[in-house]
Image (tube, rainbow, N blue to C red):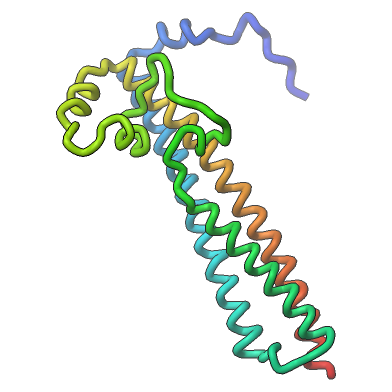
Length: 195
């Protein structure tokens, strides 16, 4: 069992800021955001894999094993499995659905306030700097010091972490739904070929 954290040994945000040079803090926060982006991409790849599995099993069920030519329990089990595979597919699509606002990313009404300017987030950039406003965007970004860029990178890590978690939950539910569909398919297939 780990001993509880001693409150006196925990550095405050101000102490961390004072101890780490701006450029190092910026690099660390940018690396954290990039790592989290990669996790979000992993979830997207898993959703594509699950979608592919759904398409393969549905094709086998209806074109290969011809469940449409059966009746009784095999047909009903295949119908339930099909509904589960379709639900799994919907969940997989939700993984790759864009989240272009802070509210969508955090699943609650929110806007950027104070000193946070997420200049690397496409939703923020396109909303605040529409076509023809590149000069204003350039000036804003070039006017940011290392501390502001560090805060922006840390904010991106925070927001993308929430997005990656949402994607992970959808992947989990899509996987479990697919497994349930596969179970109904296997039982229906066993009954179909046993009779």
